[in-house]
Amino acid sequence: MAMSGPAKTVAQTVSVVVLMGGLAWASVPFYDWFCRVTGFGGTPGQVTAGSADILDQTVKVRFDGSLNSGMPWQFKPVVNEMEVRVGETGLAFYEAYNPTDHPVAGQASYNVTPYAAGAFFEKIECFCFTEQVLAPGERVQMPVSFYVDPEIVTDRDGKYVHTITLSYTFYEIDLPDGYAALEQDSTTNLN
Image (cartoon, rainbow, N blue to C red; front, side, top):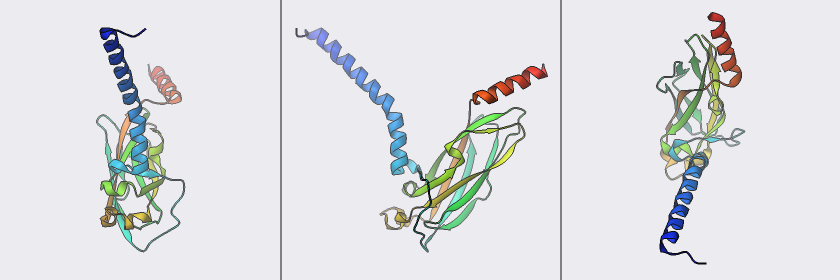
């Protein structure tokens, strides 16, 4: 049985709404994957090992750290910049301090500028891959190991990049279950 005009219009409208909802739901993980694979928007790649090729050409890497509004930590790079050879594994540290009287969990978002360098900046290990929890008064140094892919020197836009800035912004997240229970116990004991 064929649908009549109004019923057909309603069915088509519902189909479009369902399709658009499905595309919206899938767009966030797809965009995240796309940025990591292509370096779009200055998103650096993640790799498991350093580069086999190390060139004589160098690049200056600058480090930047900031906090999202309401994040109570102090957060900064230990050194503001370093020069590395293209392909060489670099190791930098960021320092975080929790000046509060309770544990605070945080997660770092990151990007690389200029955007042309994003596809060539590879992170091997980084504190930003996992959530971080700092106890009251705890101060830590968190490492990031990286290299600049040698293919940058032959890329149409990348070959003009001589300085790269790696930026992190820490924002507060909910404490993991075990920490939330410890915090509640310490609050209960104070009362």
